[in-house]
Image 1 (spheres, rainbow, N blue to C red):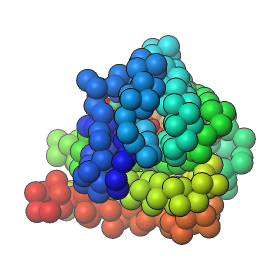
Image 2 (cartoon, rainbow, N blue to C red):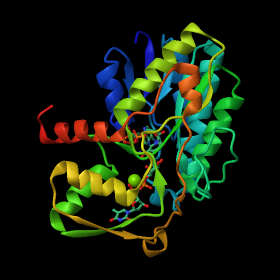
Image 3 (tube, rainbow, N blue to C red):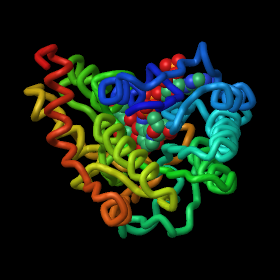
Length: 285
Ligand SMILES: NC(=O)C1=CN([C@@H]2O[C@H](COP(=O)(O)OP(=O)(O)OC[C@H]3O[C@@H](n4cnc5c(N)ncnc54)[C@H](OP(=O)(O)O)[C@@H]3O)[C@@H](O)[C@H]2O)C=CC1
Ligand SMILES: Cc1cn([C@H]2C[C@H](O)[C@@H](COP(=O)(O)OP(=O)(O)O[C@H]3O[C@@H](C)C(=O)[C@@H](O)[C@H]3O)O2)c(=O)[nH]c1=O
Ligand SMILES: [Mg+2]
């Protein structure tokens, strides 16, 4: 895509955007530190871009609990400043949020208008980012996604492959259920959305986008070991048996009907994306 400016260069999503939109301009941490929101806004003001995607964020869920001020700057104030700068330029802004904005109750897939209720600092900061982006008043889209994985960076797939090499059995929580999402599919969805927003300047808003089918982390781990041909027994445990600094939602299911209706984007099968990621990790693709 021509004239696209992307915040982030080394993260999971940023790397997939690099593959799909090689002509875009990517700003790494050295070029734009999200802990300095005003600097991010001036990068946009001084660039000759026609759309902006924010693919950078503070994503360390447990560490976030111990540095809330920094998390707020990176996940809420920086996207807010980006959204205001794009509104001034009258160009579309695309941002990414998370299932962790929800409190995880029930088992019905969440729709965009459901009340949020984050359980931790990361989720609360992402929710505030969403709200500030919408309040900036320009043309924006926020994609809430979940359980992102790819061949790059740190994610659950790579953690499992690594742990599974050392252990014959792993205890994995089975009472948190959601949609694992390949970063490559999020990148593709963002590019389709950006083009549609440029064509129809009235389009935008909040969208859910996650891989299908929904699964527990234990079920996800089992499929990872099965596809990787790794012999590791997955023993199901409950969240209560896996204490962490941040609380995580039990029900992370996202209803993705709205993005399908507005942009024709359907939920990708994460098992297919997983096969692709494992190929890339083996170096054969
Ligand atoms: N990972 C997941 O499971 C999920 C992610 N999301 C959301 O998706 C989006 C993309 O996440 P993902 O690609 O997985 O994230 P990663 O953790 O893979 O990458 C985060 C990126 O943000 C950059 N970054 C972090 N802090 C700063 C900073 N202060 N200044 C500049 N850059 C910074 C990192 O740079 P560096 O490499 O230099 O550290 C890195 O490029 C985020 O908005 C995230 O909240 C939503 C649901 C699930
Ligand atoms: C390593 C491990 C994790 N778990 C659990 C902990 C947690 O509930 C779940 C997943 O672990 P992770 O550390 O990958 O989870 P986490 O980093 O919280 O993943 C989240 O990241 C942020 C950025 C998001 O936005 C979310 O959508 C989600 O992807 O598995 C086990 O039960 N056993 C284990 O051995
Ligand atoms: Mg993590």
